[in-house]
Length: 435
Image 1 (cartoon, rainbow, N blue to C red):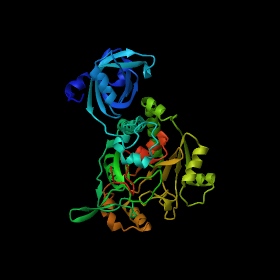
Image 2: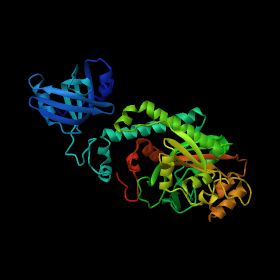
Image 3: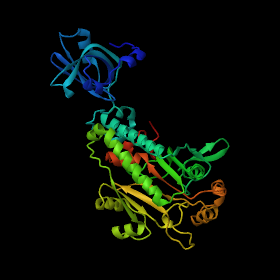
Image 4: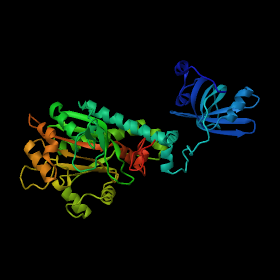
């Protein structure tokens, strides 16, 4: 029975599936997707799914209208269906309740599916991403993005409560934010421009006038990597704070990540269970770069490798490991030296590693125009290309620090995913521009 339906009235009367199991409501109107169908002699079963859960709909031949019974037999998987009916207790039904249909309308028919949209799908990730709109039907995929939604909500909530200002930086810029050549160029009217690789310069300007700011913003990195932890379009969760050094912002990171994970544990119990993730609020461990290098038996002056990060996780399980006071040579030009001594080799920069993956990089920024110019030159960059940035610190700039966390990578870590693309709604890598 394919008919139109009054969506205004539906929204007034509709019951979410999860509420059926909580309430003692006898008569309900529900809408959702045909999760599965089954015929068993004179009984037709339909598992109906909405964003909140799944319930069994049961039609026994001879006990309900023939048109309803026949309609249920023709509904294909993932078709969109409206059902009006009665709720009854059933020991055989999942959750102990089922719906006996009194009216059924197929709102949208699903053709033969190009991929298996079930949670037991054997379809490989690249194929699933080709049909991402259908992959979103999987309750496992939905669980990942419900958790991601809670991550961003908790991040905003934490910093709102701390008096931070939510800012919106530009995504089209005239020159590199961090140096290097890994930028995507775009034509901006008669000029050449670039997609922002970082909001770094802009959040510093805001912090130097309004003291505390946070952002969730997309950034782009034109790096030709092909790993399970990198993508080319990223959502960053950043903060920048005036009158703060690396110690202050590391503490903000520690407290905010613990808060975010606490909220995920509290509000996403079903999703974590579905993903088979046992999440704990992490401990914290602070190590200088020197201490980490000795502990890991690294060659001094080298970056932490993925293997080094995994070793830190084994030594400090369920712990956010802060590696601070890195060599200046390994940090961006804008990171403040440890001291103002001309021969200083260490920085006020840090990385944070959680569950064997770097989730954050940050530190104290240079707020002195002369020193900033020197550091640009030391990194092989032309200060002329950063004139407006340097000038922004000439008129009363405060010492300040900040950091950046990749939303997709934090989601990957929290959900225990093998590939960051699973934690990205519509991934962009060197090969993928659709959907």
